[in-house]
Length: 474
Ligand code: AMP
Image (tube, rainbow, N blue to C red):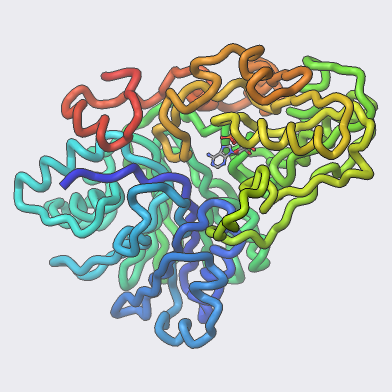
């Protein structure tokens, strides 16, 4: 069986040894909802067996009923929110995955994307493994089950040393919770404490909600095992130079989170300041495309001295699907989310700040919307460089050919989105905003230089798997 599109953007949360473990996991997932809105799930342990509840939908909808927590007993739990991707939005692919094998039960929640997944899967199937899902995460479970090693840590390191790519993982067994971050440290993962209970979360905003204390980030290549005896840290994986994902700062993480040693809000605001230095323009107001453009727009306004205004208002309660009326409504898709404030925009020269242009369709509709609301000029500023290459490490980006900047010049994009001017933050500007003190970030989406290479074998299945071109091989 072919794997479908890879496991994309996700959020994970776990808590060990707390009387309200599953309820707190629900809250943790609630704070991580921005990392995935397609489906969610929780697995708890009562010390002798695991219990699961998972479903398609938002966290508040899936876990809104208190009765559900009666079916998730025990003092430890892990949870997962999964982003919407086409092709694999089916209930069997909802995480955490839970299995019984010869050594007991184990559940796993995964954020990231394994680049040699199909090859390992083909191998496992050749030896008789039967897969239940089309997720790359299930490979890890099969590798664990087939490992001959005696300790759980050795089985985990055996398995993970065979896989390549991006992964933050949370494992739960009857008596242990294990957190692992891949050697490149692509995705964020942090450790906290609530009283005597350990907490692990994709982003620190999940710790804040449950009043847990932030202890530190889990390091690239680190595995943490938590038992009733306490926490132990190991480095069982082959070393690599850490390359955390810079796009987490640009778009994905929540601004109140602390990731890769920085507060996301402050980094985004600095990107806006730098954007103003690089792409000045005479204008009357600076407006963000809410919500992701807000901190950068504040930075741009501060640096340029042009007043910050809210010219577009976002409806925060938009569900996943809505039925378009038969009578066509102009820019319906964007209007559902955003509406202009005419009184703010009328007769103004407007600088609009967004974090990225992917296909260009949203920017085009927004520029038109701002003009229709009476703006005299629309100057689009993007707080990251052109996104020209797909991500294979867990951000949901389309095929290369669908990324407008892979085949169009900046002026062609400007024309397409019908802006008066268009300016992107430079790569150097982005790096100086983020800071390069400790680490060199993965910027493959901007540069096409991929830090973890793709396996040569099985190129064809890999192509199917990703539905994207693979630009570099081992
Ligand atoms: P478009 O250019 O129409 O494809 O969409 C651009 C918008 O998508 C920007 O406003 C971004 O904030 C947002 N965006 C960027 N990357 C992603 C992503 N990986 N998933 C969802 N939305 C994204």
